[in-house]
Image 1 (tube, helix red, strand yellow):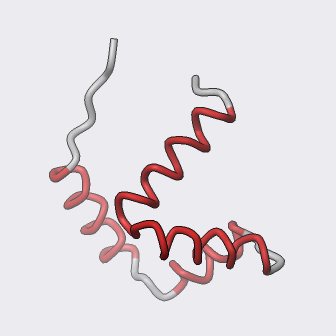
Image 2 (spheres, helix red, strand yellow; image 1 turned 135 degrees about the vertical axis):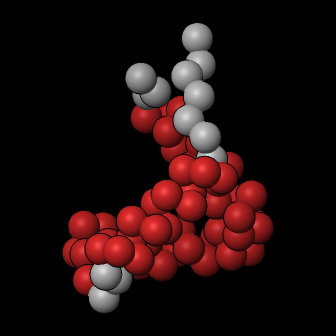
Image 3 (tube, rainbow, N blue to C red; image 1 turned 90 degrees about the horizontal axis):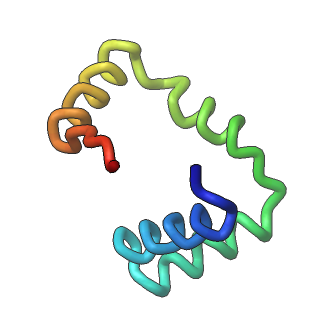
Length: 71
């Protein structure tokens, strides 16, 4: 299990890889600036997605990102 610092570092690295430096800073600013409820945000985001579409996306993701156990 990762500690808080490791999780934050991994998260920042993911943001930097996908968004770049400028957009990562903008994302962090938005999260900090607004009263942010992650659960509500995700619920609103997925409320309009059908279960079939969600399942298809999950299956496609699993195929593109096979799970491996690190030992």
